[in-house]
Image (cartoon, rainbow, N blue to C red; front, side):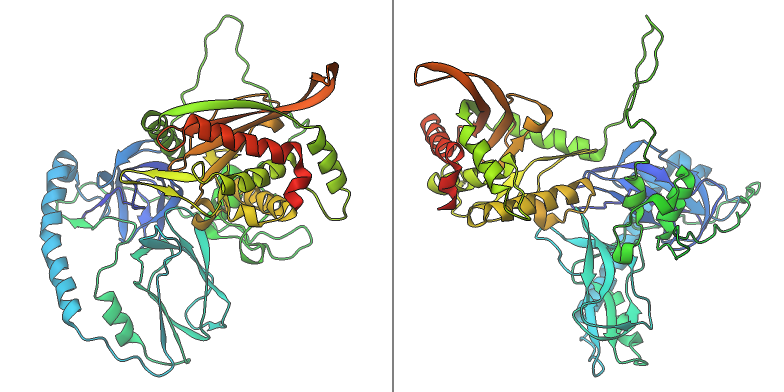
Length: 538
């Protein structure tokens, strides 16, 4: 019987999803566990696994199209099955069937609540879905790095778990044999649901697994909907011919190239030579993001715009990505709810230039002007907690710790990794951490913990030759500092016109928490540190 597959809710904030790519087409045979499509949410692009078997009879959302959660995504059923009734009245049928399945599920859950916990066999450890960030409510198993029967040592990476913000490695804290896997790759479950069972080899844990699985866990797919009666058979759809399996890729020196099946499939479709791709997974394993972010080296290195004949209008419509929508929503909310005002200053950078030049002569030491600004802000914020504050509906929080967000541009938009306790770190430590975070940001490897908790933000466009600009506050912070380029120009010193180097900065403040005089005093303190950076070493 035909099964309606709806747009799944893949994160707690997801309201709609965009089909980035279909990995199956109408007429294809579907096995349980096959990846049907890649769904783009407001935070990430995630693989959507089928939990049904049959033939893909209908695709309701084409590639690039967006629809709300729980709207029709696809229909899977018997080959040649008539699904006209579902297509014509699918919404009502879907809603009706959902009501039918809701009550039995509730009964099962209530029954399982009353069931006493089964006693675990000796040496057996139940591993549950971990909470990998403070906002995580459920996780998806992106990849299992161990299989049932494998020996597991403490510290081994069991699996890669995908949260609503990032994919993270999950390390085992037990040793033994992997006896049971509770969630297959691509399957999702709430925090604390059964993930795996580890124990002595040969131990029967079927009862333990059954006890856990009696409580339904949320998968990437919405609850499946079955029609009440089987529709009459229609003309059969010819199934596509199976293609020969692609050969296992090897490195240039003949060694094996470790690559995930999905990454391999995407590389084949895009014509990418996997030997040129740098893997970011365990043991250099190439994963989906490595292939998607791969940029081949082109002759000449320069990109050119599309040729358009003189006098001819031409344009391209680019569908907004989910990340772009999320950025637009957050910044619009900030701009129109926080009363922004701006304070602009110009600092003398002569001492900072000399300081950095001398500092970087120390072996294995390299700091940037941005590192100097981050450190100076951290020290100044400790003296001006009002600028290091956050606004909430019922209170204002004055932070005594300093976590500075550093805005980083990525191909899909903008992310803000956070340098924690920046005032307690040396310039070398800040420089190393900023470089590490920026690298992770550009490779889409930032964890949720590395993007949370900022109390102040620095945005630097000086490296792009921008002299001055203003930024929108990264809420719930109260301020953001915009840093411009260092410019060589005539300045007046001691009544004489001389060649000098200056840098313009603009502080955007939320007037609900930071008054004008408070912001000005913060900039005066910041000026003292930046114009005399040696004072930051005391």
